[in-house]
Length: 308
Image (cartoon, rainbow, N blue to C red; front, side, top):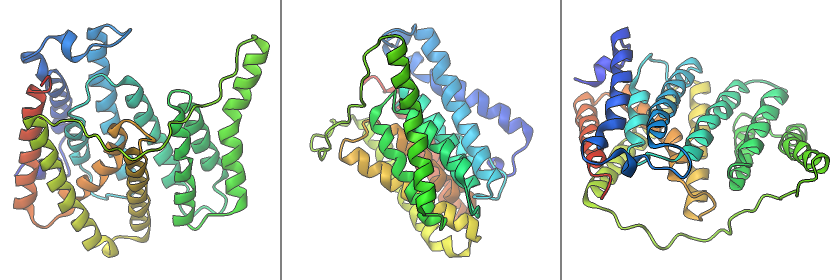
């Protein structure tokens, strides 16, 4: 019922999405003060609220357009936009993670653009530059350079030239940073990586968060089953792209489990694509609509109890 309006959408649905982003982000303010939800060390709460609306909604639209333009999901839809916002339910004031995750959209764009290119040097160089610059915000992001190797192997582009270009791209921002410290007599700081260790102490889940996580887990399981069930029927490009997305999700998940990355928000982008594919293509429309409604209701329920 609901999903059919998000597939091959009319222009009015885009306006509905914008209104949804505003209402969904501001929904906790019916129960909590703006200082409780959108507090930040140096950004005023109202500005933080604006950022919380703009960056995730732009991220959702950018991801949706990227996946459609690269023919990964061929049906024109806005499913991914809504799924991404719903997956972002717990996150209200993580500006560094928003910037990193949004920038990783450009990494995905360059990776998908490198498909069937014999010498994708410019794409790999740009990817390496982006990851290297992001490492100034969070040093462990530098380890996502492994994503270049994964995508190169998947697209049959793995060779010493691409590795050399990747290494140069990663080193270049630090090269300029080194000369900046010399010219202005500043100390040079090497990236400090977190010591990897298996996460043992999980945060205590409130009841609304537990329900939301269970719904996410249920939807994710259905999405993975649908993906692997129909993957062989997709085009070669779509098939390889989904394999890249799946391996990207596994890479981030492993880094999170071993505390190499700290924010689970980075997992939202690849997970959103896989869930969006399920809601768009599944033949079990009644089940998909039921799960989508569950996701919406649990997200709003969690949002109104986010302060617990």
